[in-house]
Length: 149
Image (tube, rainbow, N blue to C red):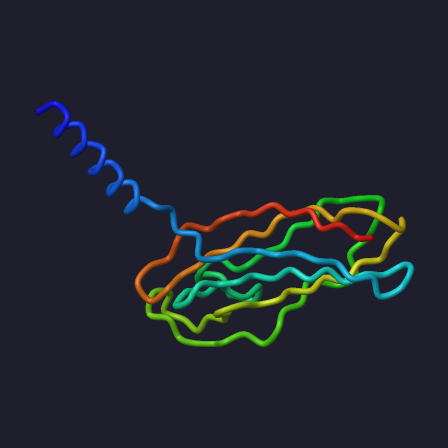
């Protein structure tokens, strides 16, 4: 009888653990490409699971948390302009009672930098919010380090 109880307990905990998985519908990838001896472009790619979306950097206040990039200051490089993004999907969302700009499937953000040193690593973080048609997950911050060679 004790063995049956133990086996049932293990099965129940395994099933409960499977349902308690933390959702991570966005994965990030980073690469830098030198465009000259003193300049490079950072490519920051978000791969987004089916039926989910992340928001543009250009969302008005009162809406969802917009995607924001923060770069750690360094003497090795300086930012050139702002982080750019492709044209976003614009749609009215009842949840926020406004038009919002967002991306599905994947999006590649770009940041140009001026190099003061030939080899460096650009460190920073991205804050973003992800939603689908049923729910929004809390905003998340992901740190990154992009080698520039």
